[in-house]
Length: 288
Image (cartoon, rainbow, N blue to C red; front, side):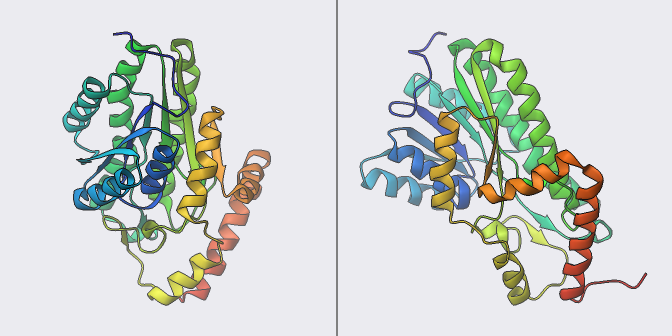
């Protein structure tokens, strides 16, 4: 299948955004639509996804909603195929859906490990697998995977979350090198603190395993200077258009990435000290 290529930036393009009902996914979809892209908002929260799609259509954009669990590969594959049959192309696949499970490793059961791996890692793998062969046949396409700044640094207290995001970074960079020969672009988003439901308590499908009062959790995250999703999306889409491999926003979070690249030992030491200070403030520190 050869579509009317090459990739479109962004007017006349087609994009699928998983986790498109809220947070970063919603903001990405709205920004893409604003720039002339037809977007498919795929989410388990179908009613919210349809509300967002309706809002986009109201202001003249092109958007549809799809009820999707990213852990269901056949459903995701069908969505990609249906989208290509309807629009004739797939320019962008944003594998954005994710959850957070906060807590120390001793707080976890195996079900928490499985849950976060299934959504944050397997969900991305499913999206890549569903879109990649289509993009190969087209001869173009851009896969954009959402990881996190925690995928570029050690993050005690979020070990399982950080693990999945490190894996998404590794997947994305390796695939970028391989896919370039086929005309396919791959980028990975590494957000810092963004003002979304996942920031406090993990969002609808995530959870917090530590007993932290909501006001203390809110205070802790406010210190991270969270960026609004709309500002994040505007900056990110500019960098996607420039085909950047690793996209860190807010940009000041790059300092953590640089520290860990220059000295992993220093990065671990700083993470350990920060974690100890944070647990003491929250009254969670254990005597050693």
